[in-house]
Image (cartoon, rainbow, N blue to C red):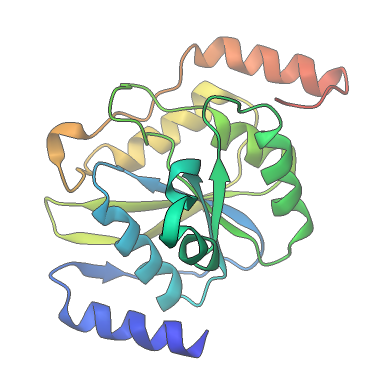
Length: 206
């Protein structure tokens, strides 16, 4: 960790991006949203933010990143392979990790697909099931800033929670601005009802 922190310090000393550090710093497990996610360069910024804050960061990445000679490096950097064609059990697996590791800092990029104009709901389901808050990480090409924003506890009222998230990201634009996606889930009201039914019936969220 000291070496990674030193690398992060060097990065921010020469980077054209200005780091806005988390204040106050959150103590405990959480999910970190990385948004707007519009470029592979976001990965470098994410690691530099986490290493500067000395966070034992884990991150979800498509399984193709873990193949070939760089696969081992991606795992050592905290990667968790995700098979997007077979997502069954992913929510439970990541929620269990967040629930059992008191220092968990798991990065999720809900707007990670360039073809989609909506966020994926996995981050919401994971945080709610694990009972951990969500920290709003951001990059903004307009101001040239990046960092960790507020940490919020999700309530299960999806439209209300997403309104808070939308308000935070309303003035943020990604590295490639035209790819920036509004934080919006498909059928937010309906998702609230389904989550309430699943929790009330004791069913696992999937």
